[in-house]
Image 1 (cartoon, helix red, strand yellow):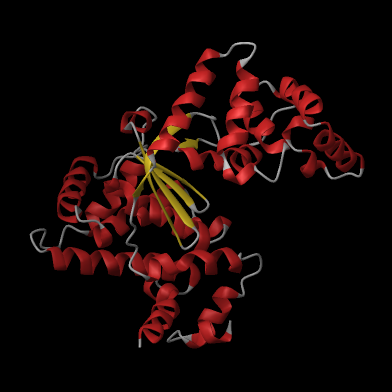
Image 2 (cartoon, one colour):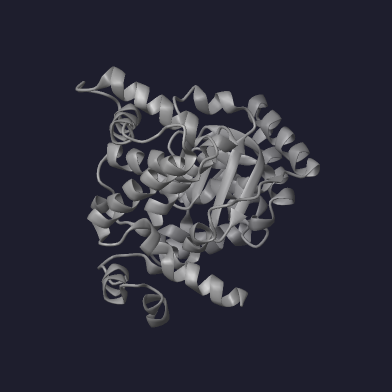
Length: 331
């Protein structure tokens, strides 16, 4: 940890930053390298055999017959590598996807009696988490849903942890503890009213153009805590500013937000995304919008100041020690 702080131009402030009570240093260290590397991500295509499995699973979910739950569980057992060593997990995934929790629990007791008894013993010992969703017939919270359903990314399925909506994807990346997915049908996200969503260290986008925006939300998740993130407008402000620094579409976006600012200056009651765009548009009005370098320079200054006000370090200073470490490794 000392080595990381020493890589900062202000090691004392960096030590205080890492030492904030409740800060998840492990999550930060596992994921920050992607940002230090310049935020470049390489998407890979889902293999065709995985697409076939996904198609079969979606078909069974639509069928919703008496035998479909069994068929879904068999399909999951055979094709999800992450559940091979945990017999109960395919039953949990199928239960959440179909809503048939009690039926899945009965099937587990019939088909995997030893696993069922093991979970019963764990439950009796007070280990409610080990018992999992099959022994919790009340509402399932979003955290548990996310933990259960994230393994479906193996076959190109992202599941919204809040709504349990299934969103297929064909392209994804995994880098330095962060995962990202591009929706197969971008309209599925657009109908929800947004181009991307993020949670913890994951993001789902309608197209590649939204990647940098959602990456900034992920950065906030790992680099900031609770109230430090501010309200929804604050988070969107940082995410939109990051697009002017890192997105290839920065010039078009900047011009668009300046126009939005002119149109909505002084208005109240704007939704968070539009309010953030208005704020950025106001700040960028004095910049030569034909100069990409000027846009990047000013946006970077705004972005740095946004973080400095909250945690005492600019965005550049937060990633600085890791940039220095990588330069040392390249020598």
